[in-house]
Image (cartoon, rainbow, N blue to C red):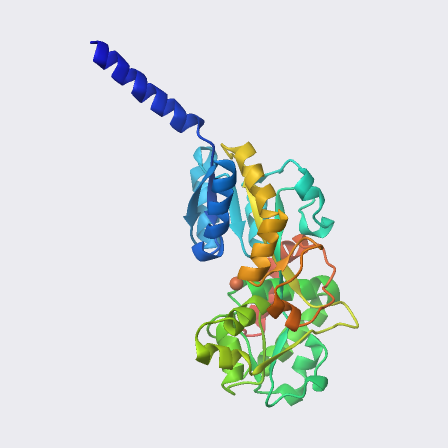
Length: 337
Ligand code: FE
């Protein structure tokens, strides 16, 4: 009997420790390799364990929705503000209480109601062939629709949110009719039907299948730092051109995080957000992933520095989500597959 009681005591203690143990449940649309080392470091420093669930952003949002108030999710991590907006609009998020770390974040990288915030910045410039394009001949996205680029443009599919957000940014800044005109003109200049991801567009330019593409810089940086010689050589055939530098600036987006509506571990989740905004994490984002830090006092990776500095567009990031549906319709109308 005595041993039974002590046994029960041990089990109860273990169970209560399990319940008490600090943990964060993270739904992440980022590839595990792009976030796991940071999470391990967080656990080491704080003792808070992170349960990582990875998947496609839209599936994770659907999952959050179907789990409802029983969802174990604390945080949703995605690579595009359009998705964070979608989660917020569906009522799946809540206000993150502002910490000191978050105060250092430029205003534009935070949702007005504080439901999401940016953790890293992505820029989407023009990428041209060093062999066939004189960098002086192109200065703005608008140039891409001129007849001289006919059959020379490679773009990924309109089903990809990066391009949807880029078009949404044009709608926000140029208005619907000018944006539609640009999309129509761009599609007419495609070298081939849209296919593959950002890296595939860069590779197509390197292979001479087209002369210009639009892609996020971390893809090119990743290729330049690749251990694979062929990949590195492909990347060396690309010049980065920062468009619209005398005007509105280049299109940018964020990877970011939202606090789930029914987060069971809110405090631990906030600590993780603070950690991801720490200098240490921001440095990791830029040196390992070649993403731009969201904090201004962090030095960029050497490869990012080699692409040069740029003027970024200054729109409210939430607009990229708000205008997403119109952008998608616009791309459909233009026949952007
Ligand atoms: Fe990406």
